[in-house]
Amino acid sequence: MPQKLEQMDVFLKARDFSVAVTAIVERPVFEKNRKLKVQIADANESILSNMAEGFEQSTDAALAKYLYIAKGSVAEVVTRLKSAHRRGWLTTAECTRCATAGDEIARMLGGWIKHLARCDWKDRGRHNARISKKTRDATD
Image (cartoon, rainbow, N blue to C red; front, side, top):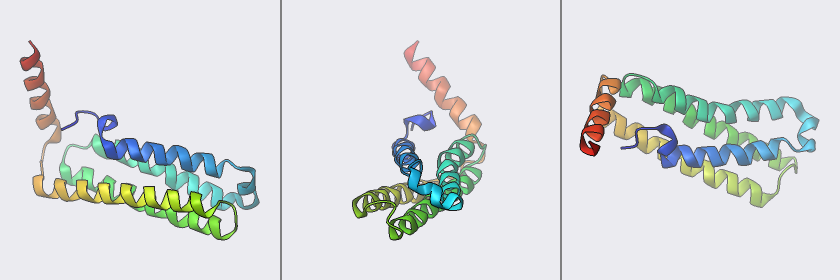
């Protein structure tokens, strides 16, 4: 089990998705509708932020709450990008690529949420401290 969020595949995929979406909304054509640009940018930022904030929570249930928000933000970004595609602001290939990546991230987040429901740790900090101690002891 990764000790850091940045070591998790879902985080790495979400980060790549975020970078790709940021590059899209920074195009001059998105200045035609600043509201849509800001909505996409805010939802995009919410994905990684909620994953990070949730990862610092003390229980699995609290982490899952933030992961649900991140998952919803992924859906929002994809939906709004599809709206931009209908306006002709991104190609079909770009829209499909983003939607496919978003779907994969959403599935991964859903799997993580299900895993958390099964484990249901009440004190993630104490659990992580035990793992860290075992890791330190094994390397000494």
